Amino acid sequence: MNLPPTASSGDPFAAILAVPFGAFGIRVAGNVIHELVFLPPGTRAIPPDCALAERAVIQIHAWLEDPDRPFDLPLATRGTLFQRRVWDAIAAIPRGETRQYAHLSKALASAARAVGQACRANPFPLVIPCHRVVSATGIGGFAGASGGYLIDAKHWLLAFEANQ
View: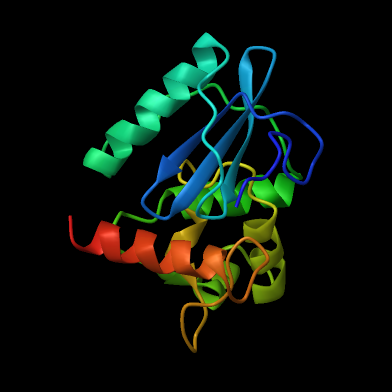
């Protein structure tokens, strides 16, 4: 599949890299990463068009070699206060482990659905590892999807992290 360099949002990608679970788009705004986006397998790669996108590509490749390697990228401040609380809780989930939406909702004194909506709104997957949040009955959704390449990516990421 050859998506245009803007995919769905209209904002151009500063880079698109092929990854084992499909493709990954990087959007830069000024001197910060504005968004990281899972893209379907076969999406055409685009080399980085700025130093920050190159830095992100290098760190993503390094993470694929060692998922314990932390990201050190300037991220745009995004999301509501509640979403940022959820994202902080997700960022604290150790590699190779998962948490159920209900577990996070209890810890945050919130509803599981609200936690799921915050996961869906996560603009920085991998950096904020929302793939580590699962439902009580299985893998759950991912980035707003309940099937297709996004769920395939979630399965791949969980298996990859568990086997490292």
